[in-house]
Structure formats: C-alpha cells, structure tokens
Image (cartoon, rainbow, N blue to C red; front, side, top):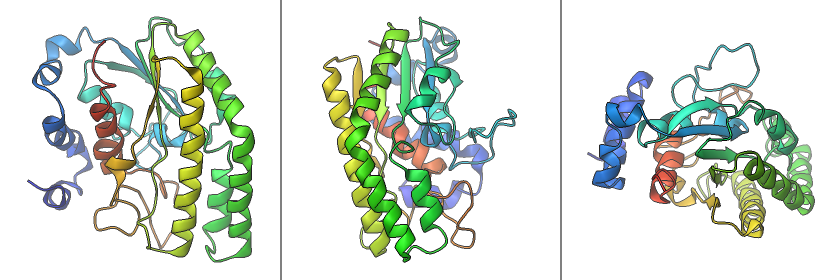
Length: 281
C-alpha cells in the first residue's frame, strides 16, 4: 500500500496513526527488532527521555498534553511516542518544550535518571532565532521585516556551535549510560513552492550544518547526528502529502511549520530506525 493511499485512508483518524506507523515502518525494521515490540519485551525495555524544543515536543501534532505548561507536547503523535512504539526503548518522559533553547536544556535534565539508555533531542533553532523568523514572516512573507529576520537568524549561526557543544557535553555527563541522538531540522517547504520557502530551506540547511559539525566536534560515538533530510524529502509544505502542519487561513496557528503526525512517524521516527538508533546496543 502506498504512502498516498495510507494518508487518504487514515489521516482523518488521528487515533489510528500509531497503528499505521507501526505497519509502515515494518519494512524498515529487521525481524529481531519487530520481535522486541512484543508486550513481554516492552515491559522490560530500557528507559528513553526526549529533550529539546517544539520539534521534539510534537507541536505540529495536536491535541496537546494538558499539563499546565505552554510546552505544547503532543498527546499521541510526537516522534518520541512513535519511537517508543517501534523499539525496545520505553519513553519515560518527553521533557521537550516549545520555545526551548540551549539554555533550557539543563532544567529539562533535572530529575532524569542516570540510568537512562536513550536521549533524543532537537535544539538550536530557537538560539538561531527561528521563533522570531516565524513571527516576522507569518503576516507577510514578502516583507522586508521577514527578510531581515531571516538574515539575522543566519548571522546567529556564527555563535551557535559553542552553545551546542556545551549542551551535548552536559547531557552526556549527566546521563553517562545514554546514547544521544541529535536530530536535524527538516526542510519545511517543497523546493520551488515559493521564493521565501527556498530562502528558509537554505537557512535550515545552514543550521543543520552547524549542528552536524558540533556533534562531530564531540568526537564520541555516544553522540550521533541523525539527518532526517532523506525521510522528509518531497514532503515539505506545498507537496502532495506534506509532513508539516500548515493552515494558510490561520498563519499564527501553533502547529504551523512543525512536523505533523505523518512527519513525526514517517519522517523523524523512520530516520531513527534507518540510522539504527532504536536498536539496543
């Protein structure tokens, strides 16, 4: 069954997305890994904690957990939830929060067990000014204010690497048994969909280059960069089956420009599967 047919059949039923994802990812998971999703294995699965910003909290896939915060954590369709479903790792907590930057990660680590086996995170976008770009560009993508915000965001990348290296080092030191997967920010727009989209895609590429370089600078196999570009390719805003939430009639909708349920399952989770992150050591 093709992705297009699955989308048309199941997308309106958000509650069924988890089951669809397991079925779709079956072809990307080896037989032993599939066996690890049985109830007996899940009961003894090792612990997994998600950290970072809105791309990990699941902001693009409402409804959100009513936890009294503004973190916009998806109730049932963030990529950490899907990763739990298709792996031997048990999601203990998704501590990621909308608007979080590198300075917020230390607080997210509070209370996390030192025996945590897996950490995934997306961070750096807010440090580079992505929230400012969205606020400036949502009302009028063609405005000089929008273009100026993008240019300023790219300029911030020159000071981002030390912040990322410090953050990765802190996570590794705090959770000495964990393997740490640092995920990329996927391109949000179909190439050629709009001039602004192409500019934003270029800025995303520049951000990912800094993130990948910062991971490489750590020089440890315990911290891995997971590039989700291939899994999100051909599924940006403007494509036939977008992996991003976007409501053109409500440019300020909280979910906009974030991976939707399909992006979190067939994009981010598939990238974790394809890179072998969700296998036990």
